[in-house]
Amino acid sequence: MIPAPVVEHRQLGRWRIHAIQAGGQKLDGGAMFGVVPKPLWERRIPADERNRIQLGMRCLLIEHDLGLVLIDTGAGNKESAKFYEIYGVENAGSPTALEDGIRAAGFAPDDVKFVINSHLHFDHAGGNTTRDGDRVNPSFRNARYMMQRGEYEYATHTNERTAASYYPHNFVPLVEAGLVDFIDGDREILPGISSVLTPGHTPNHQGLLIESDGERAFYLADLVPTAAHLPLAWIMGYDVEPLVTLETKRRILKRAVDEAWVAIFEHDADTAWGTVIHDGKTYALGSKGQSS
Ligand SMILES: [Zn+2]
Image (tube, rainbow, N blue to C red; front, side):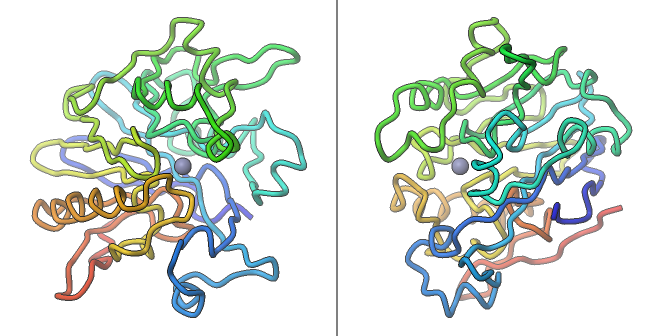
């Protein structure tokens, strides 16, 4: 089931932002929480009979002055039924829940002007492209796509440990069609939207800092996939460099508290966003803030 609500909205400075639940996904709870023992993590997110936990695939749509900006694109619909069954992906729509969510927010996929990928794993970039017979086409025909150059290099030079997450048809056809603007490291990529390298999950994974009229939100992507992953040691087993993740979390979550960011959780089935607090012992979710 696609976790509800499909679309939540709030104001960030002068921009309206929409959290779009682009589908549900079920992954092994042990893999999602790394070295954290099951008795601890299952108090936060219960496991099903196959030890999987319910996750979301939340994308962010920003009504930016230069046009609509979409961050991440969910899992798309190009893989086999078996693939979607293994990963518990439920995102059917017209064609996917992402497009339906964009319409529910009051727009059409063709209105999207910029697509930014946090990284290129299939559950973040799968919706970049759509299959039409033998052809793979961009899902957002009027958009420029933005991704870290280092992530693209990593995604196109896989090994036995990394290959299962990267499907070239999610990104290579876009590069070949000249639709991609590569980002090199930390920089402001659109006025008020900055890429912040947040390595660990992958070496060039990026978060997106969104600032408008003094208010700041941060799209954490797979650095902190759910609110349950806020404690520093709660790190996914999927991360290729977990000790790098630890130091990235230490740096980023301190800023989240100090600068009162609206933290955005991509894979949380329930919580789209909220502030982060440090209660003296650990990081935790503060106020969920107003959605409307
Ligand atoms: Zn990932």
